[in-house]
Image 1 (tube, one colour):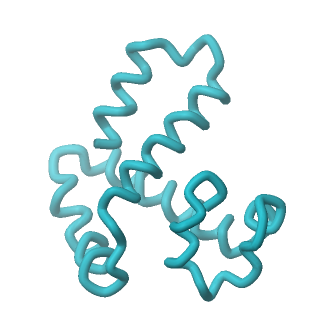
Image 2 (image 1 turned 180 degrees about the vertical axis):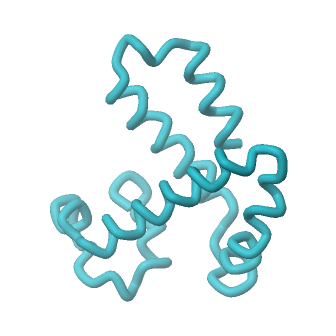
Length: 104
C-alpha cells in the first residue's frame, strides 16, 4: 500500500491509509498481512494441489473484489524484498529463485 498506493482502493474500509506511518500503524492492515501469511502457509502445506487450495480465494478476489491479478505479482515482489532484507547474506540466488518460483 505504501509502494503501490493505488492498491489502497481495495481497502477503503481500513480507515486511515493517508501516509506510510498510518499504513504501518493500522491494525487492520497488520491483520490482513497475517491473513496473507497464513494463506501462504496453506500453500506450503498443500504443495501438491495449490490450485484447488486457492480456488475459493481466487473466485473471491477475481469475481467479487475485482482485484487486478497483477497486484499479486507486486505483492510477491514486495514479500521477496522483505525476505531478502531480513535474511541478509543467507538470501542467496538459490533462495531467491526458490521463493520466486513458489510465489509464482
